[in-house]
Length: 185
Image 1: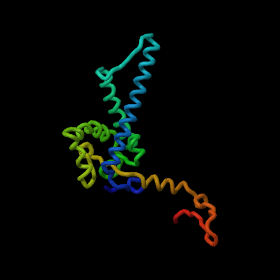
Image 2 (image 1 turned 90 degrees about the vertical axis):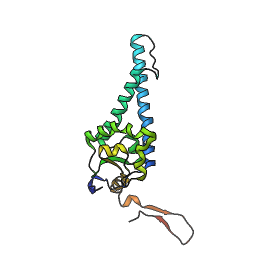
Image 3 (image 1 turned 135 degrees about the vertical axis):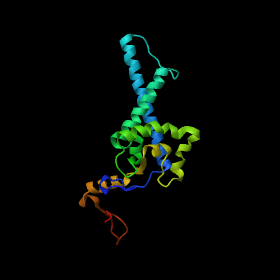
Image 4 (image 1 turned 180 degrees about the vertical axis):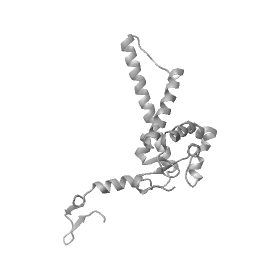
C-alpha cells in the first residue's frame, strides 16, 4: 500500500483480532441503537393510539427494518469517514488499495459483500489470516483494505503537547539521586 504521509495512513494492515473486536463492538452498538429506536417507536405509538405496541423476532417488518438499519450503519460509516464506531475505538480504518478514502461506491459494495464472507463457515475471512494484505472476501470485492491509524493519532497528540508541559517536577527519592520524569526527545 502506498499512502500519503499527510493523511496518516502509514499503519500496518489490520489483523483478525482487531477487526473481530471492532465487529463485535459494532454489532452491539448497532443492535442497541436499533432496540432503542424500536422502543421509542413503540412508546410513541402506544401514547398516540392508547394501545400497547409490542414487537417480536418473528415480525418480518422488524427483521427487514433491522437489516436496512445495518446496511445504513455500515455503508454510511465507511463512506463518511472510513470507520465505524468499533473501528474508531480500535484505531483501524477502511481505505482503498492505494490508501485513499473508500468513498460511497466502495462502501456500498463492501457492505453488500460482507455477508458473503460469512458463507461457508466464514471462509471469506481466511484472507485476513493468510493474505499479505490481510483482506477478507468483501475487501477483495470492494477493492479496499483495513489499516491501523494509531500513528496518526500519536502525531496529533505530540503536536498538542508543549515542551514545558511535558516535564514533571523532581520527585523525592533516595538521598543523592534526583529523579525527574522528562518527555523523550
